Image (cartoon, rainbow, N blue to C red; front, top):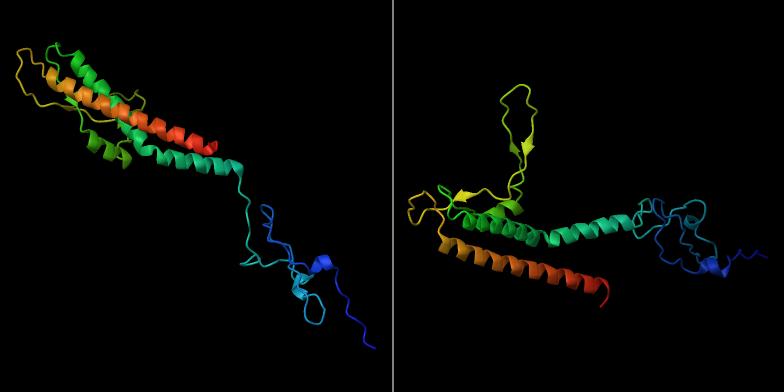
Length: 206
């Protein structure tokens, strides 16, 4: 009389649930299989301790780190607002330049200055406006140093009407440019505020 093959407990016959292993460990949960003759598949026993995780059984599975997820999310937010942030910063800087022109409308020999906003924004986004200005050394005792660039390289505005005192500020032009730039600045600020409120509402589930 042939001895009956030992049948494993019922819990061992149930399929193993798909569960990712802990961080830094290999998959060590054996997928128990019962052959037609009632024997447990050898790969599920001591011979093979690594379960095939729908790929190579030697692959490592890392659990996501909350801190890394936070950094990744912050990086995505920075990228999403990069254009608006750079544009708003340049608008604020141009506002200062135009205000200085208006304030010095009566200053003898003052030259009105401005910059091409679209060209500077394009260079800034491409990373071509981040190099510091090197300072020349006139003595061996001087310490090498560098000065941070202004947000934009200023250019002298073309003189439309000659002035006796050498001042090139045209108040009509400066006021029009100041008003237009201020409108764009307020529009950009409103847009960013709306985007932030939308993200906060989505995060809070409202």
